[in-house]
Length: 113
Length: 112
Image (cartoon, rainbow over all chains, first blue to last red; front, side, top):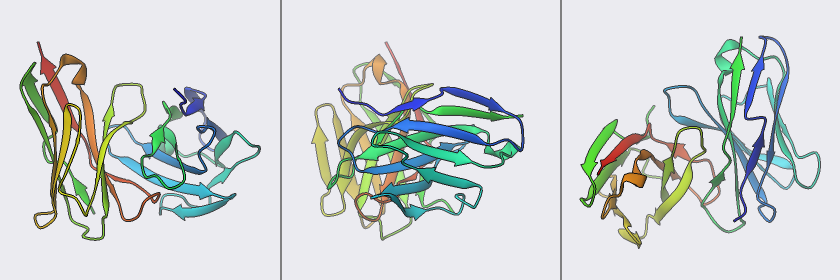
């Protein structure tokens, strides 16, 4: 069964460094999302992406964040200058056009020291 | 601002019995409601959904009920199995494909 994959599974970085989290959505899905879950808190929406542009973003998704679909398969989330409070699980998701069920990847645990 | 609330952090049920997980919402603009299950170290897995024009949707052992006037939905799992032990998230969105707003989750433990 097709699934969303994410790399790396765990990323440790120093505060102020840039990180890029990678996702490979399900191949025929055209809508992509990033969510995060800080330990002990709820899953929070960051951004959605369709047709090579951001379609929706939350207040969390400030100028430190950016997304890109660099090729036909990858979808990336970049955090330019990480802060301690960026430590969280980051989940990528995708959906098939015309559907509403978002399929999530296993997540990347980001630890900012 | 908690638009989606799951007021029970945990629920314990015996194998074979019914599990009922509850969710309340405040935003009357929500049109779709989804339930996800999450195991540790994995991403949320879609279980079942319902649109606001329906009051019930069933898929095997899982049934979701929606009471729009009370802004309340529930997930029924019958019969419960030990493999159902996980965190269950209620989520909602205004329009298909838009951002999902999640509740905090309810940890279900099914004992054999």
